[in-house]
Length: 167
Image (cartoon, rainbow, N blue to C red; front, side, top):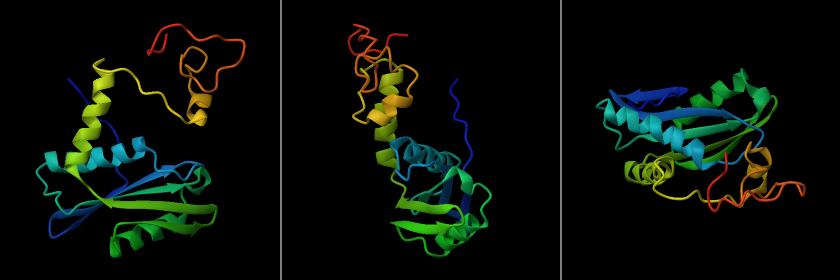
C-alpha cells in the first residue's frame, strides 16, 4: 500500500470548486526546487482524486525565511493571493526579510510526467541523475560515498559503484 502524507497550508474554494492551493516553505533559499513544486502538485492532484474539478486550480508556493514562521505578514500575503490569483512570481516584505511567491496553474499532465520520472528511480527502472548543484551534495549524507559527489573531501575516494550510491 502506498501513502502520501503532507499538509497544504490552505485551499481556497469558489462556488464549491478549488481555485487556489497555498503551500508555505520555510527556507533560507528563495529557489523553487522541483521537490517543492511536486509537493504542491501532489496536493492539487489529490483534490482531483477526491472528485473536485481541478481544471482551473492554481497553486502558490510561498518561500519565506525560517524566522518568518508565525509572521502576521504571511497571512496578508495569503489574502493578497486569494484576491489576485494571476500566475506570476512575486516578492513581499516580511518583518524578518522577504517572501518569494511562485504561482502557476496546476497542469495534471505535467505532474504525472514528473511523478512517473521520479518513480522510475524509486522502482529501480532508471539510474539516478546526478545534481550539478554542489550545495545539494554538500548537505547530502551520502556525499563521501557517491561517485558523482561534488562535495567529497580529498581523503575519501569514489565508491567504484557506477551510477548508484553505495550504502
